[in-house]
Figure: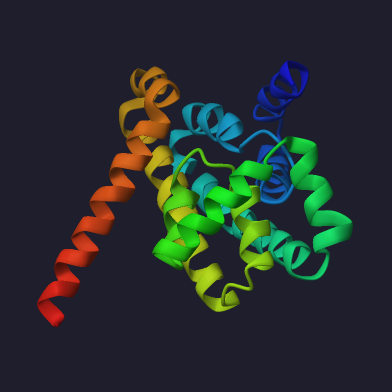
Length: 193
């Protein structure tokens, strides 16, 4: 794992880094173990003015990879989805996501897409649960876009000063942010009833 991590850091400095980032974002959504943030951080720090292009690339390819994984869960449950989930030892995570999905509906995709919860499990489990594809894509764009754009902007704005903070508290920050967004949503919704 450490070898792959170091390879990704090297690719972040490559002249075609955005292409490699697109590939990593796509594959991480379905089977690759390391999140694209590993490349996003050094890429934004190296070229701060490109922060939004890096975030956009990461978001788009993460969602496209998520749609591919959705169809793996929908169409290839026994032959591909379960062996992949078992390979990574995420069997319990699928149960957690299904419980979250039963309680929160599509918001489970949004919340899990923000957090360190493995996105590949969300994408495959969404297909297995036959979540409405348009809803899945929309919520994936919102959550993944929010995650990558906020991280990229913070790196652009604060530079290397925020790097250690993001690396240490990223999970907590995204969970708190997601919960705040949900509270705001339900608060606004209460005015419309």
